[in-house]
Amino acid sequence: MRADRQLWFKLELTQHAGSFKTRGMFNQILAAGPLPDSGIVTASGGNAGLAAAYAAREVGVPAEVYVPESAPAVKVAKLRKYGARVVQVGREYAEAAAASVARSAETGALLCHAYDDPDMVAGNGTLGLELLEQLPDGFDTVLVAVGGGGLIAGMIAAVRSSARVIAVEPTTSAALHEALRAGGPVDVPVSGVAADSLGARRAGRIAYELAADAGISSILVDDKAIVDARRRLWDDYRLAVEHGTAAAHAAITSGAYLPGPDERVVVLLCGANTSLTDGLV
Image 1 (cartoon, rainbow, N blue to C red):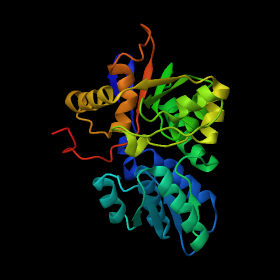
Image 2: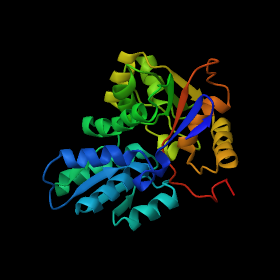
Image 3: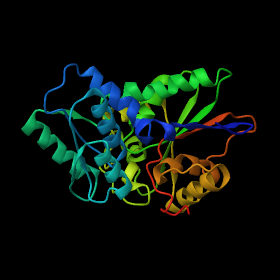
Image 4: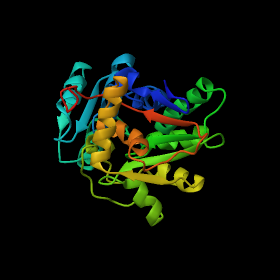
């Protein structure tokens, strides 16, 4: 979607299951070959779980999804609509992830990681390949909201030779930013309005290694900027996105990232598993 002369939105919010993660999760499941009768198990702030539940339903196996107790009700309801068994545990993603690992060991279900898996990253990278086809005249920069790093890892792999990839993270959940500063993934505190989708306590190893190798920079935006960007996307374009998605656009609307006069910028709008009653109407 062209927002103005030099700005495009990539509308992954219209993807099956409501976010980009369906690309990677399908690839991760299909790449595993024959699946056990116990199906798959994953942990998620919501979107990876939705993608897993949708993909599992499509291939005909059961799905079990572990989410934090703070997971938005709209995401939990949609998980159940897709037929997943939902288990809410802990205050944040890391606790749900630990529970999913234990459950996989107990049942033999395929453990699907929400972001730090080569097949997940490769599937996400199809988004970048699609962008290159959709914008044949090229683009200079793509802004990517980052939680655990599965999306930005795929984007770096797909477009690094053609465009600059920039990470955008909340000030209160900045796992990749801190990993790049520390020279490797480290645990970070997690909070803020976008924590349900960007609240990874630690960046994925794949994302860190690709970002470090490519010299990726990370921009931080605060909660106020994220809320404002989300509101603007609704008011100006009638795009209802979750706070984590709005973080990428917040880099533009807050002035944290200032494009050059002729710079062609793509903002990835990566998910919309939200409710209009959550601060929009």
